[in-house]
Each structure stands twice: as structure tokens, then as C-alpha cells.
Length: 572
Image (cartoon, rainbow, N blue to C red; front, top):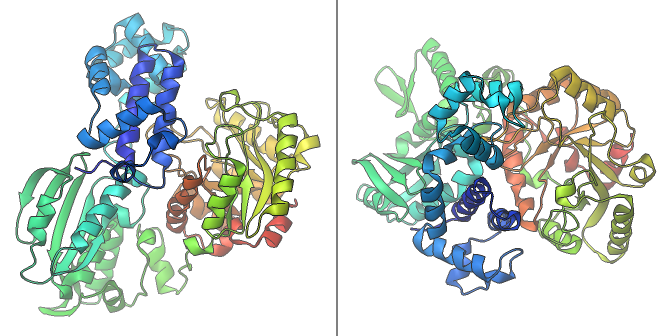
């Protein structure tokens, strides 16, 4: 069974959580968390490096012990240490980490002070008003816990798109090599590039005698076969991900691809148009009475209802059909349109690579520019830069730009927006930077009006260029803070400020709906990766998928501009 980097990172994160619940040495906890970040950020699979006898200790933060543990995970799919910790602490207790607002430290307090071991015990204690009495909790936290436990969160039962990607791509590549297979497509929400994925729908067209069904079930990541037939099979992977395979004749492949890509609302809207024209549309084709009149390609399906082709990312029944009828669909942005990344970190703070290494990684992507935006001093856990260290870095960037060819570095900072709306560094240094990225990293629990006012006050600073990860959400971990996003967008437009679409897979902040609003309001969007490692720059593909879901064209995105154009835009 192949083990992907996301699997290794997940195990290390779980160990970090369990150790923190046990109140273990914080340096040991940090070592596992750093290892998780290192592995998840690697450009190659750890399993491939091990197969080629590469030295894993050359990776940042990976010593001999952790390298051995990575090898054990790759070879066995698990780690004895994780099993020991789960047995000692109790598996049910770790499920509390999924509750919003409960990190390992708070779970440990609940366990030690109230004897809580599971969700049922937590609900009972919160309803009795006992949680609010604990130090560091309070009435508001208790209420949020009850609200979270009382609802099924949208992302629960789904996994991040980035976590599904290794399985989806490797399964697809495996099936492509099967004898007789002609086409393989991963459809569903994966193809629509939703930020989370519930399961995978794979469609195949092949010759009559192709062994694709047998090969599908025999894939080495399969843990359990749920069903197996001539045209459809379902399996569960070791990761828990459900995968459906459907085999279609070539004459029906386009109709099936349209049907299984979805969304359901989009498909219903298209079928209604068909019905009004005397057509029946299903996964097998488009029919006029009993006669099949289309179905080999998706374009055929749309053409039969007098629509141009609609890109998968737009198929959510949010106006795309009306736009198609009016020939008003946007020409969506592509990865090739991006000229550079405007949010990245180095090892001066909490990044893992030097400035030179980040520049080289950006150059390999054919970028024209990269902004170096390490954290400001307020983020002490990331060793944030004070004015002196920032000026030292600025000098280093100036010197590097004299030597570099094919890439330009922008002097920047990710500066904290303080609770009163001031920025974490003085104007005397901000004015000498090329770009200032501003973020909320604290006081997430302010009331909506207060949070909105805080950010707008910060935007009033004439050196404020970009509002990073504007809602502060972390998928499956932290809800967005309360803020009037439309008001922020209008304030940003008035002040010449841009909003970031943060491409980190667990952020994807802004949402697709918010991006469409930004486009309608006319505020510029920056698609950035918030890279902490050179390979993180490749997260741009997730941001592009989200931007396409938000109807963005290249002209809507600031970092599709040349360096000269970008510099003009950054001058407020």
C-alpha cells in the first residue's frame, strides 16, 4: 500500500496533539509538528526518496529518529508510538480535537478538571454550565462548543482537496495504464475543484475486453471492496476515501462526464432546458424520443440545449446558465496567467528555506517576481521581525536583486493588524518596502462590527497593500471570524487595497462566493500561496481552482500583471 506525504504528516500531527494533551515537553511536541509541515511541503513523495536511498536527515527538522519513523510509516502505514499514545490517552478523547475552539491544551484541561473523555461527556458538562467555570474558557466559549457539537459542519465527513489529490491522481494514472483503457477522468466535486471532497467518482471508457474492473479492485491502496460489477464498482481506500468507478461506452462518455461532474443543481437546470425543448438528458446521452442525438462529448450535451461549453468549476447553478445564454461567461484565469507570488516566508521567521532558495523555487516556475513577506514582531512564536531585522533583510534582498537574473524579489512584510487597527511596525519602515501584506492573527473573537472597524482602520494606513486570508478561517479547524465582508470589500476598493485569496489548502480564503462578490464590486484580488517552503509555491494551483469557481478572469487578479504594472498598482 503506497503511503503519501499527507498520510505521514497526519500521523505526525496526531502525535503532536496527543503529546500536547499529555503535557509533554513542548520541544518534543514542536518537533513532530515541524516534521508534519516539512513532509507535507515536500515536492516529492517520501516513499520515493526512501526507495532511492535518499538521506531524509537532509530535510529541515528531520533528524535520525524522525527519519526512521518516516521509514516505518512508509513501510507499515502506521507508527507504534501513535498506537501507544492513543491507547494511553483513549481514542474517544482525541475526537474532541475536532470541536471548534478546542486545541490539545483545552482538551487536557477538560479531561483533568471535569473528567471528560468523549463528546457525550462534553455536551453534558457544557449544558450544565461547568465548562464556563474553567480557566481560559468562559460563557462564550462554552456556547460555541455547544453550537459546534449540535450541528453537522459542512466540512465534516469530507477531506481537503489537497488531501484527496494524491489518491485521485495516482489512481487515475494507474487506470490509464490498464490494457484497453481509452479515457479516465476523476469527476464530481474533485473536478469542480471544491475545497473539500467527499468521495471520488472515476469515469472510464475502454474496449469491451479490458480488465479495468479487476485492476480497479486490485489497486494496492484498496482496503475493502464494497461492490464489484461489470460497469460499476465501489471500493474504500486505506485512507477511508470511497471511490466509485463507472465504465461507459465512448458514445455516452460526455453525457456521463456531465452528469457525474455535477453539481446536482446545475444538472437539474440543464435537464429542465432540455425538457422544454423536447429532450431527455441523463448519464447515457441526450434523447429525442427514443433516438439518441448526443452524448459522446460534454460540448455536444450543451450544444443540444443551445448553450456553449460551461467550465466544470462554474457548474453550481449560480448564474452560469444565464451567462452562457447571453454569451457572457468569463474567460477564466489559468495557472499560466500568474506572473508571481506576493506572500511567502523564509527561515528568517517560520519558513524553511533561505531567501535565495525561495527565489530559485519561484524562478523554476517561470515567475517574474516573488515577494518576501516574513512575519512582523507581534508573531513571537514565528520569531517575527522587528524594524532592525527587517531593514537587515531589506538590504540582503537589494544585494540579491543585483545578482539574480530572471526573477526579481520584492521587499515586503506580513504585518499584524493590532486590536486597535494599528499596524505592528511603524510607517518609517513600511514606507521603504515594496509591498505590505496585512493580517489578523489575534483577537478572532471580536464582535462583527468591532472586527470590521479594526480592519478598515488598518486599511486607512497608506502603506497597507493587501489584506491576507481575510476571514481567518481554517477548514475543519476554525470558523471565520465575524466580519462584514462586503463592507471590507467596498472599503478596500475605495482605498486601493487588494484582497488575498490564500491558496493554503486548509485556508482557501476567500471563498468562491466571496470571490464572485469581489469581482462584482470591482476590488482587485491577489492569489498567493503564503509559502513557508519553496515547494509550497505549487499551492497556487489550488488558488487558481478557487478563483475559477469565483468567476475570476486574469484581469481580476493583480499578480497576473508584469512587475512594472504591479509596482504602479501598489502605489496607493
